Image 1 (cartoon, rainbow, N blue to C red):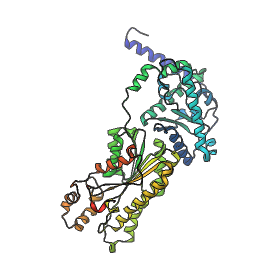
Image 2: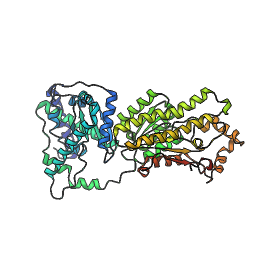
Image 3: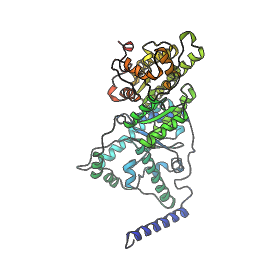
Image 4: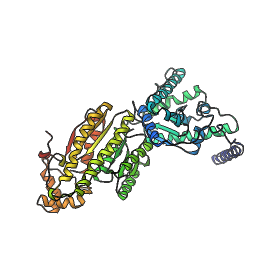
Amino acid sequence: MGDTSKECYSNSIKLIKQAQTYLNNSIKKYSFGKPLFQKKSYPDFETKLISTIRGQLSIDNSKILHLDKSDITLEFVNSQNLKKVASVGTSCPDHFLRTKRLPMVLPSLSELKKSEEKIDSVIKSHLGKYKEAYTNYYNRNKEKGSPNLRDPYPVIILIPEYGMMSFAKNKATARVSSEFFCNAMNVMKGAEGVSKYTGLSEREAFRIEYWELEEAKLRRMPPEKELAGKVALITGAAGGIGSATANKFLSEGCCVILTDIDKSALQSKHSEFVEKYGKDVVHSILMDVTSEKDVQNAVSESINQFGGIDILVANAGFASVALFEKTSTKLWDKNMDILSKGCFLISREVYQKMIEQNNGGSIIFVSSKNSLSASKGASAYSVAKSSLLHLSRLIALEGSAYKIRSNVVNPDAVIQGSKIWKGDWKKQRAISNKISINNVEEFYKNRSLLKESILPEDIAEGIYFFASSKSKKSTGNIINVDGGNITSFTR
């Protein structure tokens, strides 16, 4: 190839270009056979299908989805020879270390939709067959000293009329696995276009997949973080409590969907978190919690982005000030719409998807000290916040059958980073408590039993507790993060 590294590199490039030119000029029109299917779309069913598949794949270890509907993917999955070519296996070791040797091929999207009422059992059957085949592959080829059987479920799932799903322990790994299989499809296309594609033998593939040095590398991987493989949706994510919660979740390995009605603030937080944690784990959606359509679209988009939702933090807020006799119906309705109806809409939608996932879940409402303790001049706000306590209890009652937990975190006087306290609320609280507006933060600090200022990060810790496995046996409960306030003691 050459006497120097430069000559070797140059000659390699020349040979690759020659091969590329030959393939481009010689490849058949239909490398995978003629199209047997056309791309179709059933949005509601697709989200149900994704939730069902991810739920079953995540029983032992949570998985994250990456979707691919690129031209090469649709050409392959819709082709006449899909099953024949896919069953040959990949040819490049770097590929199947990421993708496994074989993908799982499901029936077409239309055929799956015909079985919508029993889709859970249909998917369970296909995954069971794949698991059995992979286990048999392992048993046929294992040798003395071979590493133990790894996760026997598919990484790559191909669906005619739809595209490709890839599932892995995190978004980046799922995305890279998808990219590797796209490369594999291009190799298959080139080979089938001029001759016949041939993969590595099963024996050789096994020796590479279960190579002892590869196993040693896997053993050196750091332990997974608490929320690894989990997906959280946070409303009001651009505010103080919402963004602190997102930061906490992301630091613990969670994929996070940021939602907010403030476009500018949302974009700013999105950029901040992407820079800190990477683009794979953060997704933002502009959403009005009072709009049923917005909520439904946001949940569907979240499922298409990550595969499902495991944690909901209903945090979007609003505060108003008015003596009871001066509380207008307009003000009352606005509080109820944002604080009560808004939480109802998002929790109902996510709850339904958690049932489809059939893998439990955690719903956390961010309420207020006012839900337990009356405050002058805040009747509409306090009543709306109080409704969340009972909504959470009712979800806990009904959701227990599905291992869906529901709990409440009650903050008090979280002034730093709060949009609410930047408005008229701070001024009116000063008037109500007969203090200077400049002394509001110090007043609330000294009012608490512990004489502590409450920060957004303090609330995020309480929310994180209910989101984590540390509270897996807790539902229908309340945590007050208020520095201690005797009027809001729950017992």
